Structure formats: structure tokens, C-alpha cells
Length: 44
Image (cartoon, rainbow, N blue to C red):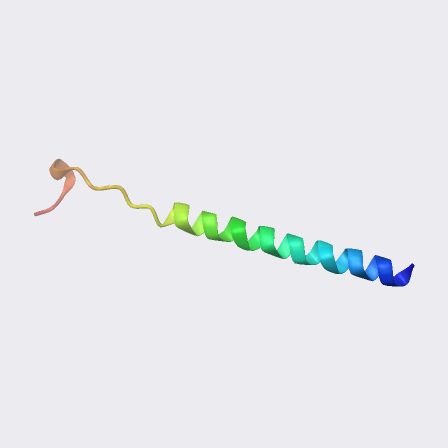
């Protein structure tokens, strides 16, 4: 029973780690988005 519990917890931690990496990667991509500034707002 202990081996099964250990295996289940280890698997759960691995899956949650992958989910957190995926969430962090998508948030970083979303925050890095910079739309083009309209010509009237640019200082040229």
C-alpha cells in the first residue's frame, strides 16, 4: 500500500509540475505581446 501511495503522489507532483510550467509559459507569452503604436502617438 505504501508503494502505491508513493507512486500516486509522485505522479501527481509530476503532472502538476508540467501544468505549472505550461501556465507560466503562456503567461509570459501573453505579457510579452506589444502591439504596434499608432503613428499619431509615436515620437519621431
